[in-house]
Length: 326
Ligand SMILES: Nc1ncnc2c1ncn2[C@@H]1O[C@H](COP(=O)(O)OP(=O)(O)O)[C@@H](O)[C@H]1O
Ligand SMILES: [Mg+2]
Image (cartoon, rainbow, N blue to C red; front, side):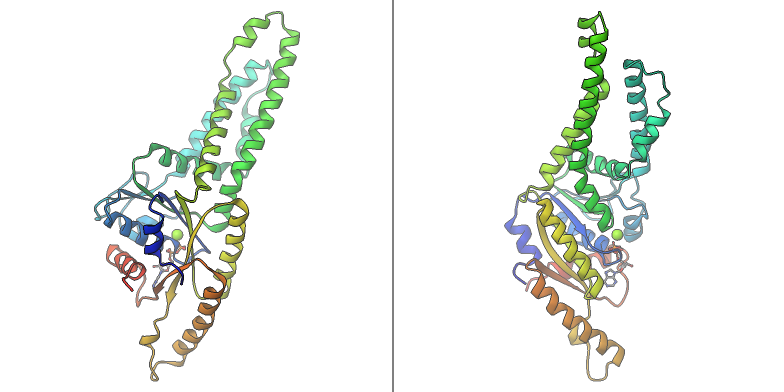
């Protein structure tokens, strides 16, 4: 272990946006919560947010945190499950309005429904709505620290790859839009008037592209942003984060560190311990060697507790394990 989690936060003192990735079920929500609690305890106003639709944060804190930043009993900390349905609906209506306007502007005698359908059936649409939510939170700038318990791995990657797709898409839209406009101009005797007309659809697309671009800049700024990966000492979760880290290198997204979760504590295993547990300990030992060898970013380990992590007291035990003084 080169740097511990605590050193990373102390060394990179401008960090503001922290994300957690990894295979489903490895403990992303739990670790994100534990880190958020620690940051809040350091006196930084912290938002812990999730776009996860299964209400994992409400469950973890035994409190409804859906749709509204909520205090969960820790000073400086607010917890929020982002309501993506609402954003998706809002974006759909927004797009409907703007497409309707565009069709009218271009004198295209078609209903907007088919176009709206196409725009919103775009596989990136839902992610873009989530993305939009995250951007809004970050642009609102109400907190010192943002801890995002990200959606499962594949979604997170798509989310990140999307900024490029969006720029391409918007540029393409702008090009067709310009072509339509020059055609209209050449057919029109009212040149001046047409030229002066406002274009809310284009404004929207450009604003959106700029926001995404802004987000991309934030995501790739290693002074402000760090992605952490959580893994168990098992084959598949390790393979998943290896792949994930590879992608992130490609995207130029800064990696904060790798955290091992649910490590069986060797000092709790004696000669009398059941063979079952001994086997698992041996298995974990060999995977721990692999983690140490493969990840220069390995920065912390959390014991496997005798019970699930449920409720603030258990979250605080995770915080204690992650930020313990050596
Ligand atoms: N160190 C740990 N000891 C015991 N149980 C844990 C530990 N870490 C996580 N858990 C449990 O594992 C499950 C999955 O954790 P969670 O944070 O929801 O994973 P993810 O967000 O990656 O899907 C939860 O039931 C949680 O209580
Ligand atoms: Mg989760």
